[in-house]
Image 1 (cartoon, rainbow, N blue to C red):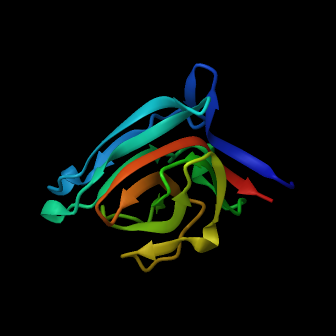
Image 2: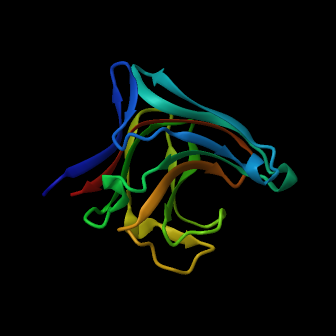
Length: 173
């Protein structure tokens, strides 16, 4: 079907709901001794409900990331093989962020499939085709039929992260 979406997260009048009925989680480099800090909260930006990731990315003590993570294993979104990519509606601070995918083939915490995007200081829809994702420290190709987690990540350099995620969906044009 043309322009079909499988909504993973959508804003609603009284907050943000996850279509996969899973909560977003904040993960920082503190799990490995890093010093980055952040928050993950429901918010309203320019009249739209969103999940807002804010914080400071620090490279000190081998750190370097904060992440909004959504576990999607055993949900309809876990099998994305019929879709072309991931669509995000975001409002940011003109910084570059990553979208990380984890599949059943990803075992180590530093492994993922990654694509980057810039989040402007206005609401914008961004489409990331699965062909734009590259394996990071993993040689197996991305298995779209066995996704486990989607992570929106501020990573790799010291900066203040401020990113709102309004809608997140799998798309096919």
